Length: 194
Image 1 (cartoon, helix red, strand yellow):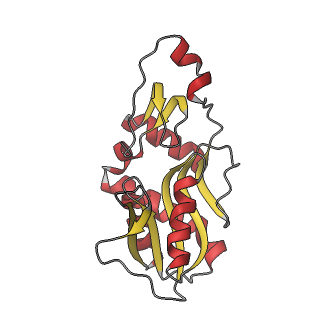
Image 2: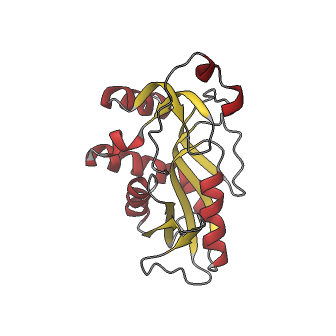
């Protein structure tokens, strides 16, 4: 079974592939939502996805990863599993009171350390780009980025080479032009950012 098919089957089997009317972290609306937390709550699934994503990153990093960085909250579990598979340490970024992505909790990156950024789902690539900027500002060399799901159809540009276990071209709408809103379908916000 191809990696993409395995990943989507895993989402279906665990109830992580949702259909309805969803508000994405990007602000866009979509009739589909992939809830990674439902899949990653199972440690064996998380470990397998992390190892598979680490293997997909291998050609881009040549075994040179010191630290894996992920955005909180969605990227923490998969980032940890990718770090385990790569033999690297794992840190995560959080938003401060002003909404800016930052390193907290004593996390530090030493100048010259090599890193990758791992996210659960990429739609526009915004969170990944923010984590890349935080790591670069701290002096890290960001080699690549990866995610379990790429909802952009491969179009999201994060400024470094990027891989995903499953690339989808899921339709999304700006809120002002959303047919689901016009139909009166209730909007659900399942993501981690409130």
